[in-house]
Every structure is written in C-alpha cells, then in structure tokens.
Image (cartoon, rainbow, N blue to C red; front, side, top):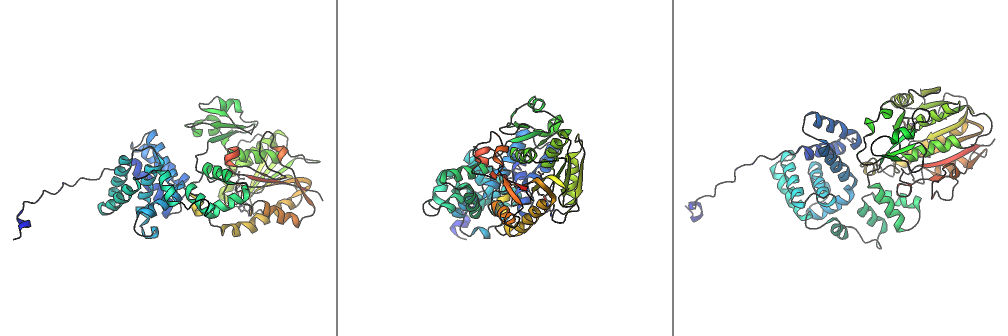
Length: 472
Ligand SMILES: C[S@@+](CC[C@H](N)C(=O)[O-])C[C@H]1O[C@@H](n2cnc3c(N)ncnc32)[C@H](O)[C@@H]1O
C-alpha cells in the first residue's frame, strides 16, 4: 500500500444543489428561443414574464432586470463575442450555443450592468449548473473570471482594431453592430466619426415609449394627464412616456383612441396628409398598411377632412391587425388584403397614397435587439425589386396632381434614394416635392427634397420619406 493511500482521505465536499435564480433562468430561456427558433425577443419575453408573475416567481423589479439582461445581451452581442473569443482557447463557433448564451449573459452582467463582479460570476455559474450541468459550469467559471479582470473600456482597447487602422471594424466592435451595417449607416449619414458614433450609440439605447393621440378620438391633453407623460418633440399628436410608463394601462390606448407609435412614423403620416394637392382630396390609400399604425393616424386625419382611407395589406393576418387598429375610426374607411404590386383598384383612383414598403428595418434597431444580427446584405437584393414595384404601382394609383409618399424604416441608400431615383427616371410624369416644410420645427433634415430622420438627432426611428407628385 503506498504512503499516499494510507493517509486519511479528506472528506469529499458535500454536494450542493445549484440554486435556481428565476430571473437568470428566464433570461437564458429567452436567449435560447431567439437563437434556436429565430424568435423575436420582444415577442418571446412578454409571455415568459407573464408566466413568471402568475407563478409568483417574479415581481416588477425582477421583470425589469430580466428584460434588461435579455435586451442588453442581444444588443451588445458583437462586443461580447469579441471579448469571449479572447478568453476561450477555441474558435467561438466550436463553443456550444447554450454555453455561449450563459457566457454572454455573464459578460453583460460583468461589463454592462452595475451588478458586482463576484455576484455576476457566481450567479452565472449557478445558472450554468442548472441549465448546462456541473462540468460545463466549471468552464463558464474559468472564462468569466478572466473577463472579470478588466472593465468594458479595458476590454474594448484590447479586442477592437485601432480606429486609424480600420474605422469600420473598430466601430463595429465598440458599438456592437455588424460591419456591413456600420458601413451602410455611415454611407447614408455622411460626415465624420462623431456622427456615426452617436448614431451607433443611440441604436444601443432603449427608445422611449411614444404615444399618438389619434385626432378626433383622443387629445394630447388627455394623455398628458397620465403619470410620467410629457409632450412629444415634433408631432402635435405625440406624448412620450418616461421610464416606467405602462401604455397598456392607459384607457385611451385600451380603447384604440390612442396608440403606441414612434414620432418618426407620425411625421411620415402627417407630411403625406399635409402636402398640398390640387383639386379633390377625398380618396386616400395606404398600400402597405399592416399592422396599421400609420393607417390609423391617416384614417383619423382623413375623417377630419371628410376623406376616406383605403388600407391595403398583402398578408391577410396583418390586414386583420389593420382592421383592429382602425376600429372605431370616426370616418369611413375600408381595409382589404391585396398585393400592392397587382392592385384591384383602378389606376389614378387616389389623391394621396402612402407606400411604407417592406425593408431591412435598419432604422429601428433600437427596438429589435436581435435584428442587426439576423439581417444580411443579401436581403437588399430581395427587397429592392419589391420596393420598386410597390412604388411604381403607387404612382399608377395616384391621380394627376396627387401625391405619393414613399417611406422606409431603413436609412440604407439602396432602399431609399436609389429606389426613388430608379423609379422616377422611368416616370417623367412625376416630380419630387420638398418634404422638409411639411415637418415644421424638425431640425437637420438635410438638403431635401426627401427627408431622413435619425435616432441620435431626432430621437425617432430612422424613417425615410420621399414625396412624389404625379404631374402628367
Ligand atoms: C413596413 S410595413 C408597413 C408598416 C405600416 N405602414 C404601419 O405603420 O404599421 C410593410 C408592410 O407591407 C406588407 N407587404 C409586403 N409585400 C406587400 C405587397 N406586395 N403588397 C402590399 N403589402 C405588402 C408587409 O406585409 C408589411 O405589413
């Protein structure tokens, strides 16, 4: 018998069951759903939170923390991946996705929140024990201890290429956007480093909740009576809810007299409604209406002027949402499911036409934390022909003297100016109308005649609008 085997054995550490922290487990489940099923965080999270509240696992603060952990981790994924890659000894693609999710959640707690380091590491290791098992929890522990050795700025200095060497790659890592998105946003924004940095930083902020008081149905005065409500920046119908405001609890929202709507979207609808048209002004069309935010504002404005809105949407279930959004409108309207590239209405039927076309949504990255990682440059090849076709039919649908509004919630030049220029080149019977005077009081709208809004300048989504009059 060896010397060693005769020594009294140290008693084995008693096995401790991992502690299940409902907030972290829920955040992990949400990240897995986004990863595995291509789910949207803003759709996955509410039912998970509701269930946790019903089970008595959660209070309001837990829900806020879980939401912050999911949204923050998804937004900052690009930066966190670069940091994790420095701390593991194999390529990230060889790390199991659930392990990577636990690591990213841990890195976010360490570098993106005020949670103390030791608590962030131990909570992540407990989570790993619950959802991955004890073996992989050790790996998580080792990686997070390395990450905890520095703060976010220190890590960025280590993992981001220097700005002077590769500005786009640098910004992509620092502000957690895919490089191609940085490049596209910069092309559209123009200017130097400061502007693009502000824009990318704004994309990583949670947007305020903005309400619209639908004219003739609710007033901003009524909404301003709500807790935490302040006037909008630009739209006369907008009211902003500061942190903690709960739109679903507001009576006017429950009754559909008001809705949740970004001010950029309100401005697009208002500009189209207010652009002068010669002659009759009784027939308005929204050719891509689902889910109905702009249509509801247009329909309310149309009602005030004795005009009728036809809201058309290709997807029947989204047409159903438009019907719900317009329900209770004080004036007449119609909702149909129709393909806007092969419309059932006669050419030249409308005085005002909006086409808010399907797009990459690169102007609304604040709202959809995972969207930037899902989009591919190839998506532009799919949207381009559809956007052109929808704009062409919109021009066919408006009468001579009437106006078409072409809108996107993307500032990508391939979806904005390129589409408008291409289509107008083949349509000599059209002219661009200066949209800037139709957004009174809104600064920094560029040289026109089209307008591009920006999150970091206007606090809105990056909506684009070109107004096109049919002249012959
Ligand atoms: C950007 S969204 C419109 C958002 C809407 N204006 C609002 O404010 O709620 C584009 C819509 O166009 C619809 N769409 C896509 N292809 C279409 C087509 N060929 N004809 C009509 N609508 C189409 C999509 O289903 C989607 O609902």
